[in-house]
Structures are given as C-alpha cells and as structure tokens.
Image 1 (tube, rainbow, N blue to C red):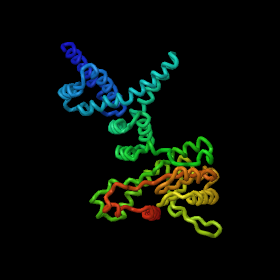
Image 2: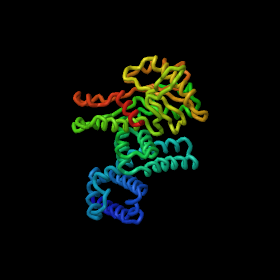
Image 3: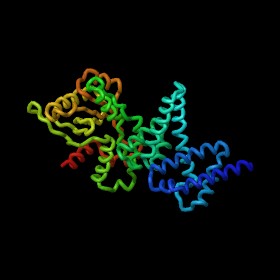
Image 4: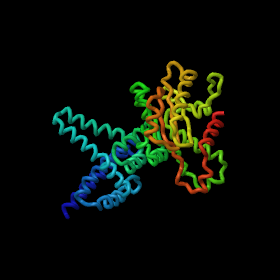
Length: 362
C-alpha cells in the first residue's frame, strides 16, 4: 500500500508537471494539441488503472482540481472520456500493428505499423473534442468512427449535424442503394457514384413537438427542406423542380433536377410515394436519355437517376435495372413513423416538399 501511494504521488507530480508545461497551456487554445494531450492522458490512466483499480479516476480528478481549480477538462467525467477515447482506438490499432509485425519482423514493416498509428491519430486531432466524444461513444468500431471523422472533416459538420448523421445511421446507409452503376459507368466514376447514394434516405422530422403545431406550415416546410437537402449529401446543387422538357412536342416534367459538383453530372431525382414497381425504372431511364440529349454538356459525365420509393423489393429492383443502359439507383425513403397521430397530420407530404422547392426556386 505504501509503495502504491508513493508511486501514485510520483505519477501525480508527473501529470501536474505536464499540465503546467507551456506545451499543455498552448493546448487549451489549439485543438490538435489538446486532443493529443487527452490521448496521452487517457493512455496513462488506462495503464495505471490496471494497477491501482477503478477508483483511480475519481482520486486523480480530485487531486488535479485542487491544483488547477480554474482549468476545464480535468473533471472525473472528462478523465473517463479520455480513458475511453484511448482504449477505443488503441486496442484496434495495436491489433493491426501486431498483425503487420507478425507477417515479417523487418524494419520496413515496423515503420508501416507506426505510420498506421500516426495516420489515425492525425485524423483524430482534426475534429473538436466534443465531436470526438460523440463519435467514439456512438460508434460500434473504429471503421465506423473513422468514417464519421472523415465525413466531419470533409463536410465541416457541426456537432448537431454529426449527431443527426449518427442517429440516422449514415455509416450503414452510405453506398447501399440498389444500382446498375458497375455496368453503366466507368471506374472509378462508378465507385464514387455508388458511395454518393444511400439506402434508405431518412427524412427525419422528430424535432417537431407541440409548439410547432401552431406555426405556419410554410415555415415548417422550409425547415424540412433544409434537412432534405442535407440528407442528399454534399455536392448536390439544386437546378429545378418539375423541370420542364419538351420531347416530340409533348411536355414532360422531372420531379427534381440537380447538378452534382463532384461527380460533374446532372442527377434526376424521382419521388414515388408508393412501393417500387419496375415501370418506374423505365420512365426514369427515359428522363435520363432526355437530359443527356437536351441538357447535358459535352464535358459533363453521364446523367444519373435516383428513384426514391416508400418501399421496395431489392430483388425486383435488381431485375428492373439489369438491362437498363442508363445509370440508376433505387432507394427507399423513410418518413417519420414514431410521431403521435395528431402530429403526423401536420407534417409535409412529398408533394408539399416539391411545391416548396418550386416556391424557393422562384
């Protein structure tokens, strides 16, 4: 016991010294240094807790608070987060590194394992601590966590948007749409297009509560359209709603037309408030041919179609797309199913969303 007390005191002195150092003071203002410090703190706590027991965090939190009463980030809760932060990533990274080293005990391979650790840590320091906590506490494994970190960096998500994407299981939905892209688009364009689509698309209206029922329906629609465009993902530029095409002196109207700034192509979105039937794919294929001939420029990539239905059979969707020459993805759309009946009536229908998009465009 005496030895443990002495070791603990020495360790505590070491921690205090690190916190006092100019490097850690700078960490308060610089996110990357702060995350790096929390990583080292979590690593140290994890190692010492296996020796001194589960009450270590409570003890060290009290001692650090006495020494640094004005400093945030040293609470019992945050020290626990630091430990979980380190353990969540380190265990998986160590396993990967060990697997590499077992293949060949060479200097080159050792450098590869070190690079693996550094690469992940470099991602971690690019997002704020609050985002990191949300990601490692809600993700099932490091692959999912790294996905949300990369998406956060790429899309500059706020914590609220990140939370929404995690709740709607974006990781599980990304790239899951039924498509014929492999047969109709060249690589690597086809792979990028596949990852752009989701299944299902979730139009989540769960933020509505009693106070919203008395508000003007128009303001509700504007809020929902923001979520609609967010759900489509980064890169979608809205071109028009009920986009007019004249073919053989007949009028045709595309539900929603977008231009995707990354894929460099037009995207036709057709909304069907019913279960998928094969005829939908045939009509969408017709629209894609029309856009390719009448709208698309020579330097644009082939136009892509997205069909959003209330329900679908994956097998029927695959059969419907098998011999279609144009790139089409078929996904389900999910509206809120968990609201009370008295609230559901106040939510916008697909037709109302289309009408509001048309009003905004005008």
